[in-house]
Length: 55
Image (cartoon, rainbow, N blue to C red; front, side, top):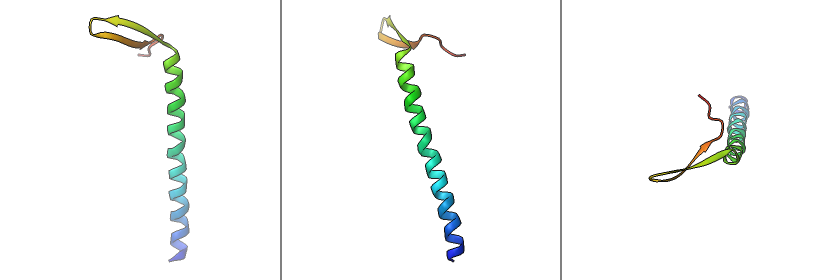
């Protein structure tokens, strides 16, 4: 029983740590995107769009 528990525990920790890193990267990209935006005044209110939008 113990022989099966240790590999599964290590696999769970590996997956959990990999998921945690993605959230940090997304926050960094979001802060960069906020800096590189242009505010457009439309009829319904202001809209922020990226300076260099990707296709």
